[in-house]
Image (cartoon, rainbow, N blue to C red; front, side, top):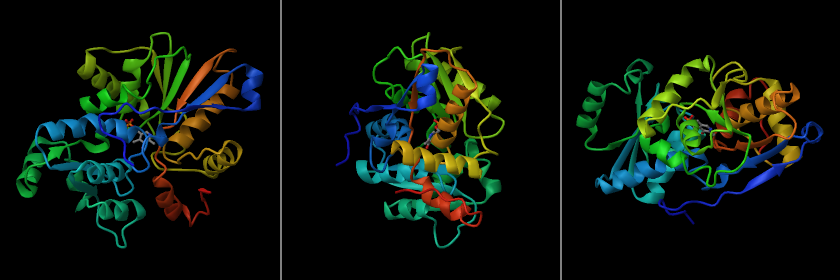
Length: 312
Ligand SMILES: *Cc1c(COP(=O)(O)O)cnc(C)c1O
């Protein structure tokens, strides 16, 4: 059963029992945002929520957005369109490869129309003229930017941390920064938010996050840090160490992490703890933002290198 768009979901947070953290006197909980919806997983449900309500209020019947061939955002948008009564169009970066990968065949099965455009044309995805031309060709649509980060996405992500608590740290993953921006809006000043960049060279993300919070509330926050040391080679790149960590974490704690975002965050968080980053007595909340749909595509791409994430 699909949760109503207007709902405020109840998420559970689980204590993670790790001996070396206990020795350090550090408490770690993981917020299971990945469980919010079986198909519109994790932060993507929150990012889409107010966009879809807005589209509905404006009388739109179609949603259009952008993404790569393995995009969690495209997957979630396709499922959200089906669940909440919109047609969807996904503008996909690059040539169409057949057979479609797991992400895109799911999207198509949900009824999404896929439009493939060249990598060159895709660079213009946020340009006014490009978008006007696209709408002229495809007809009226409610536009959502790549990755889904706009002011309404920030509004939705404010609801991820349902009750401000006395955590010392909140950790989340960062792609475009919308999720971090929403979490910051809801966090008390004394809590530090750690955003783990999923891509290489993540320092530009401060500007993105500041832009998003300024647009949302007029605020720029200083109680956050973009952690740039755990990208494992770059966006969607992985190493045997990362994959081994994800498989071990699953075995140990019965929680599946994804290789693009949450696996890198959790690895980084535990590594920082080992290096003494958190003082004794710290309470940490790690946001599991989902992304598990990406594992099958990851396993396909990394089969040649013998890197495989075990799902069960
Ligand atoms: C998309 C995604 C993110 C990145 O969210 P942003 O708001 O773009 O920073 C983080 N985690 C997961 C699992 C995602 O799918």
